[in-house]
Image (cartoon, rainbow, N blue to C red; front, side):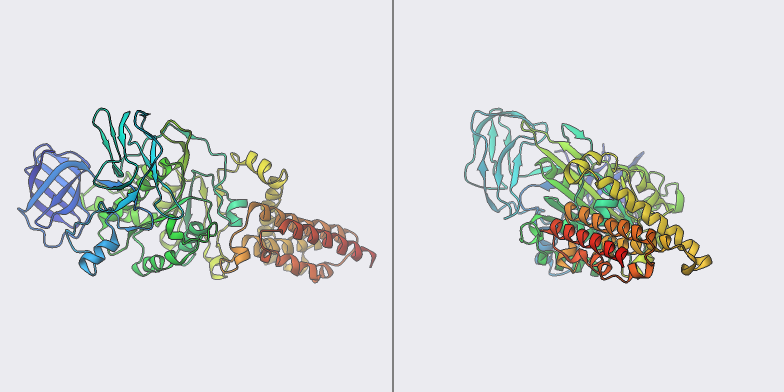
Length: 584
């Protein structure tokens, strides 16, 4: 490809202005200066070309070379992605540490994936077969958990002339078509260009997290989007790590965008030690981590979420369900704001560029459940859960509000709940889910016909609790009617036994929908029988002090297996006990 050369005209932070380039193209990468720093063209005006540099620009001087090959910023996709840790522009951090012995040095050049490694390729096609874009040529056993599917790249089709059935490295083709087109283990794909698919499917199945407050009250559909805004210390990272461990997804892409270095170091230390509950294998066998800490260049931070979503689309195209966890989207927006200010663009609200929402949309809209390219009927999905860090916990700030335009679920974290050690610290009345209507049929057919009425009763109970707390501030709890005091007691049970969940309790850390349903049945069986006893003249104190209340409070400690029988026995005990109270 033709080489385009220019000279540095000026440097301002992560942005460089070049001149003398003949025919530069937007969003193509360049090598800047004597160290060959990677950069991307973001503005062309007259003879001046502005680039954002993905590395530290310290030491660059006016007059140094700028070289472009007119290629967009791309990632390499293929075997070796899983278990790996990359920076925002897909440089493997482990290899960089081996090469430099410490911090990332300027201009370091390391291949994203090991092109020398030989992989065992198992063909699923043979010579003479006609293949279309997205067809699976064969598989590579990348990890003990995931079989990596080698696909025909988009826009490539033809008849197979020859195909390997042996070990293959990244430098040789696995397949050659009759027209001479060679298809290898790896594909390069521009990070800002969505990968194609046949069509997007409507949301009709839930993204199972195993967390009761999300699955029951605030469900997100598979292929949907959820945002988790919260102030400092409310547990955003804990929520995302819990979802990474327990959610029903085949692949996890974790994007640490602009977070503190010690927090990222903890994640990199913990993830290899975590066990996948479904297989008891290390969680890292189905995980890709993209890291761009707060001390790394801001331009690479801005690219990191697009690197992550492109890798997610690649695994989606294999037919896998992918969970992309971005922590935090606010740090990405701050990088966008810094680059915009260097370009002297007209600022919008709080200094963010006017196109903040457009850029966020180009990220969020790449989620979804789709029918993949290829002759078989593969279905893949990307579910995006992104943390938002609003300054001072103010949800009216621009990043949270812009994210709400595209999010189907809001899981708002409450500092008061966090300070009371209630986790997940989700404010159930300030949060919402737009997927509840689409998931009605699934809940009714797959869980129970009365699951949705029970969820509605829970919402009403929590709403009534909030109203009664306001009344108590005026007249005190003793002045309430006994039926209202019972409502408060049952709401406290629902809050502490159902909405609160402990990741340190093996039986409580992950709950199936069946257990969640029967827990609700127990709570409202207690409420209905206690309410009937009140009407018969039983004192509220007698009900509150009953040992069955303690059993209901501890029901989350029962494992998922066999819980329906345990719940039925508890409901029977509640009915018998309250009938005895009537006799007394």
